[in-house]
Image 1: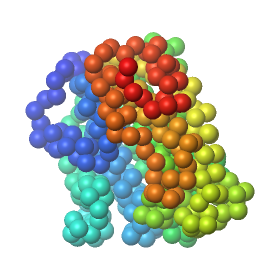
Image 2: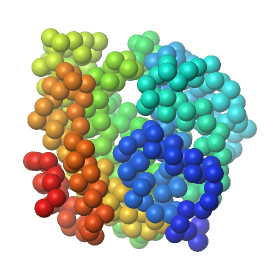
Image 3: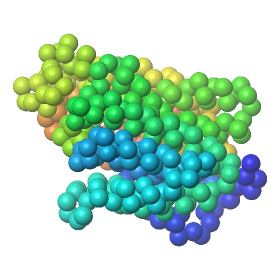
Image 4: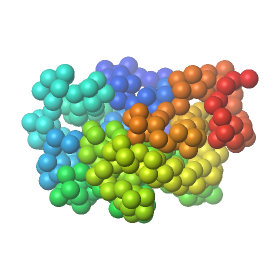
Amino acid sequence: MDTTPPTERRVDADLDWCFEAVQGVSRTFAITIDVLEEPMASYICVGYLLCRVADTVEDAGHIPPEEQARLLELYDRALDPDDETTVAEFREAVDPWLPAERDEVDEADAEDWNVVARAPRVVATFESLGEDARAAIYPPVSELVGGMAEFVDRYADEGGLRIRTIDELEEYCWYAAGTVGELITNLLAQDVDDRRAEVLRANARGFALLLQLVNVAKDVSDDFREENNVYLPAAWLREHGVSPSNVTDPENHTAVAGVIRRVTDHARGYMDDAQRYLEALPESRGNTLEAWAIPYLLAVGTSRELLDRPEDVVEEGGVKVSRSEVMGLIQLFKSQDVEREQIDELRAQLEDESFSPS
């Protein structure tokens, strides 16, 4: 076990680059990492980027499904410490699929592909972490990569994912986000007693499913138009008279909005689990309550907006909480020590109305 966790991040050019890269690929994770301390900030930053490489390949509509699956399997082998495959082999294999010019993709996608192109640097940084951290991070990342390869292969003939049922959606969400929750839990569970560790492990799935299901509901249009993926369960869409291939057609907006509302309601069913997870999280190894409470509360607020105006997802391309609400929450945690007991009060407020500091 790492016995001397630093309170300040060591000077390391590769690690500095990883922190900069996260700022470009995920606003939510950037917020989380900004309020973590060391060594947890570095662990989560590098672990997240390892996952982001796989996520970008899995989302790439320009790569044939069989090639996506091959690349993901190659990447997984490159991460396996017991496999002779190198990350350089993955980098060589993915090279033909990298956007040739930055202006071929929008800025967000360019940042994602920049991380893929520099996968050797991400992996080298991961390998520089302590043995304890690597042992906690690698298994969930491998499960994520393998799960994504499985889904790509499952829908290879469709040209994109077409989730059939709510159970299959939860399976996908586990690979996409539950494994990240498991990574976090692995890093923290060894610092608490067995009972508290059991609470963490019992509720990690609910915490991750809440966040990912809300993402599914708010990103329906982008997922279909940019990646040809439909995560809304086909069974639910058909109950509303909609084919998965027509989710963005104007005549289906009202019906699809009904399914978005249904997925959001399903997501909100995991709020209690997510809150129990937060209440059990230790503040050790540089972990902080606000790092995970902020994305949790933003998911609560986003679910409120989704229930209030689900039509905006298909008519305007998405639903988000306002920037002022995001900054208000961040400022609240920066300006005062928010106790765990206050999370329930903040949740109740955000379920009904936008957050505004008193």
